Image (cartoon, rainbow, N blue to C red; front, side, top):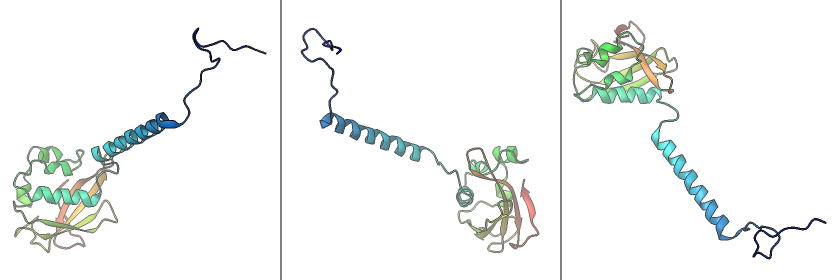
Length: 169
């Protein structure tokens, strides 16, 4: 039989015992739950884990068109597109989308991400050469590395069935 040595010269116990149950364990569990909840809440509010959807990208573009300062409108477009530098440097959105505060863009079809059809159901007299509601946009969409949909080409037309005129590519 092996004899156990005391932990300290003044201790009469021969083994060290961890506290079992009680308030210490409850406090640790509650603290762990609170820390975990706080981290989860921070993660969910600090970034969009699923990226920006096509519908959200169209809504963001609509919001940018409905402001006089369109300096951020380029952020709806793919940085790899040919005219991105032009759009980023201020571009001339007003040529195709006259300044107004009443643009309404409605996604008609997004089953093909290379041909998302959007109706401009309200806006100023001539938008991309057509008068709403007989004005449609054909958006080719691409995903970036953060899973965000971006517009890679934008064409306009008077019907949702074709005859597209390239506007930004």
